[in-house]
Length: 308
Image (cartoon, rainbow, N blue to C red; front, side, top):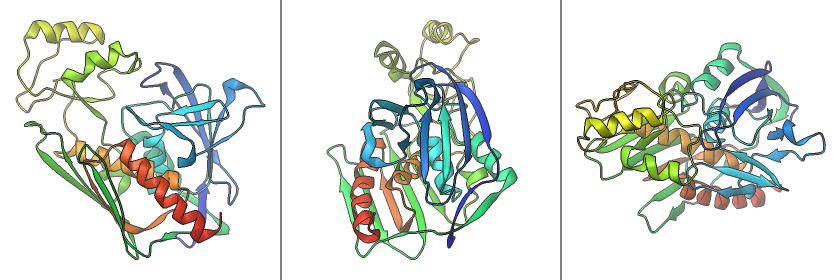
């Protein structure tokens, strides 16, 4: 684990659309001084708009992604970018957006991670402060989700998912400091079940969703007429359900890609504690709601322990 803080070597530019808003987004991620932390700036709101710290204190919504709100400034779907910054030990960065939502790109953190890894980091002359646990912290909810963080000298995450799906089954994924995040976790894309698509569209969500930024799981055979109608909605060519239970527009990057993506989400949401953790995270049926719930508890411990 690093002793000192780190930032980026260069400014990076990304362009894409927001998954839920559908907005075209230009985003930059650039170096920041020691003790700056990760902060967001909305350039479309003018010079007077406040910066939004990447902090769980400002989480306002976790229904399909993680949203921050501070003084009327909103930042949506930040978890993939934050997961990359956290896993790659980037403590200080300024992120500038010209829209409310971080671009979804291909539904993973692949492009962020590859860009940052190519140039390496800059070590800064400031100590890195860690949250060190004295005892286990556990959060549960009524849906059967559970997150536990156990004291440990190192950071690791174990994720298990179970959607009662015959296609996915029960999947697990593991991350530790020696894991190659750039190749093993960052490329893993978000996923959605076929039966969720139309309700999401009707609820004014996934305006920027297309079949280039998500895996679509199809539990049971679907009439080709229905698949053709879906293809029309997403302006894509003919779709089929492959025998493995996914739409034919893409192929899996890993057999447990969905579990690995949920691990990416855990990393991104836990980054909102504001401090790296020394501890073992065990996540069962995780989601943004319970991820940020335990992040709030851990941040309270961090503030008490570190005095900030």
